[in-house]
Image 1 (cartoon, rainbow, N blue to C red):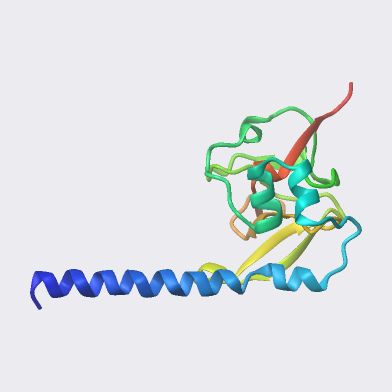
Image 2 (image 1 turned 180 degrees about the horizontal axis):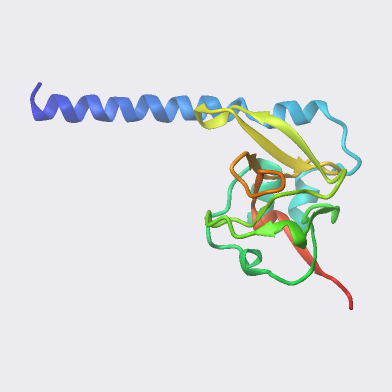
Amino acid sequence: MNRRDFLLSGAAAIGVVGAAATVLRMSNPQAAQAAEKFEVTKTDAEWKAILSSAAFDVLRKEGTEYPGTSPLLNEHRKGIFACAGCDLPVYPSETKFDSGTGWPSFWQEIANGIGKTVDRSLGMTRTEVHCRRCGGHLGHVFDDGPAPTGLRHCINGVALTFKPATA
């Protein structure tokens, strides 16, 4: 195989992987969530009116913020992290830890705050985490976290707001 054939076959492989990723992204958790009924529902236009474009992309279109960009990554005060879409408390500050991943991470959610679905996008099986009340995509949960749960809820900071504890 000469260099030209090698480069052409590499370009073809990249095209196939890109097409497969597009197809896999289409089989995302939104389909499963669409069957669920949420207490808070809005049209895309209504969500766009109350969310930043970054929050809309993550919460409503299952995007992901760039690692290391969330101000909540360095939030260490006592308080509650809530869904940026509907203000439902989802994570207590006491369960936040530095995972080194570039996203706010928690080892435990607030009871009845989140829902989970199977996410088979990107050619792998993961557990997607969404707001129980509005269905907004928050992030994913993995089993490589600290004690006592062993879980790492890897959450997009743009999908959250922080409410400091009152003294």
